[in-house]
View (cartoon, rainbow over the protein chains, first blue to last red):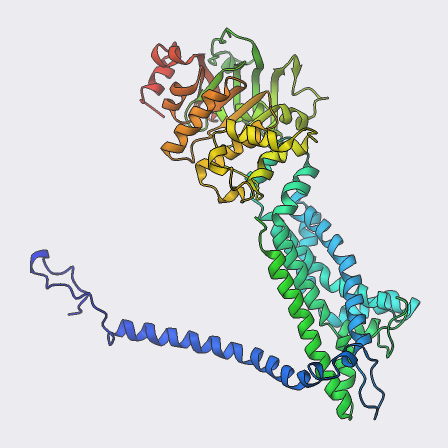
Length: 301
Length: 274
């Protein structure tokens, strides 16, 4: 008879209950085993992440945190057999193109999200747009590059603008879906309160829905920016590369991801070291955006 | 009118003894094809508390929300009748519901402060109306009138959502009265509150009626006897298959509870059905 089978005995002849932990009981063993298994799985999942960061710090850190940090961050990419040099144009290029992409996709995405999440969430247009946005989040990024190549590059040539547009195409669905989610989670009773105060629909959105949903919107925006910063395939078709600092938006432009791609394949130690450094810088940029998302994503009051 | 409609009960109209601020005459209120309320005349008198009581689904909230056109937010809502406010029908074509709601404020069943600071919550309506005077002074006065000032005066920057349920509801009342609306509609304002918070809000209502006109929907009949000057009793008519609410009786609270005219009222207040 199992110890737990209490109910079959009459109340007054039951033994005194044993309430202490029974370490070797099958139930306790199973629980311990499963807890251990989840620990192990969590550790295994963290291994790739930490090994990548470790490798980047070891390989890229020597140049980045070395004596010639200023040259690395601002210098021009070296030619073959040349020593020294840096990744300055690529850093600036990446930031400018992500900036262009943000300037296009954030306002457009938030406006679309207002329509989807607040104004007319059940209309046919909204349902179609939402479905397309979901499909686009899984869109192979190289196709964004090919698309912009066909529409812009063939006519106007490689440029930072074309790169920015390609990144915007990739950012847009993330911004739309995150902003819609954030705004549709604003409780109806808060909107009712605003209407009850005599707000127009515009005022309800502007004064209550957007501020209340802002943390969620910003988180989505920052994740989209972080994702776009690391893209390489779409830039290959649109911004190409350049060895010099960008002087106007209509010329081919360097980016960190393409620099990594170019330099990592070269047979020179100097270039390979710089590719590692650029990788580390890229990760740090993404990290900064993620931390910003965390900070801005916290509710203010 | 067809034969069945002629047999329908219609309450004897209540003869107001004071100035009427809102004269509400409902012919029919529809949600889509569903007839929610019919034939109810509810005059709201100045600087009094008018209580709306009745069983669930009797349309008392629907009528209350029709008084400041809150129901317009429901797309299938249709109102037939008139709501006269200062000589104008608020359902007239030219009337902007947004403006109506600035004069006729509302407090809801669930406390619903905005996700902003206590101060900003109360200042919301003032800023909305581009109030030019001293906002801080008005916020303090509204919070004092809502009997919340002492509890929050040192933490006006904290979130309105950090307060307890009862405090949140008093904050919502402060927010509603900061702009000095003419009339305050309260839709079961205490149903989410504990007895102590309920008592505080009730005392507050009695103080508010010195300056404002109040209309109060309540599930709690004791609450109606404690605070309402006049009481309107609604019931729901299921004889025709639908669930249509209508006014059964309206009069001074004491009379409705102690000497009701209608049998239905007597049964309801004595707890024979609910």
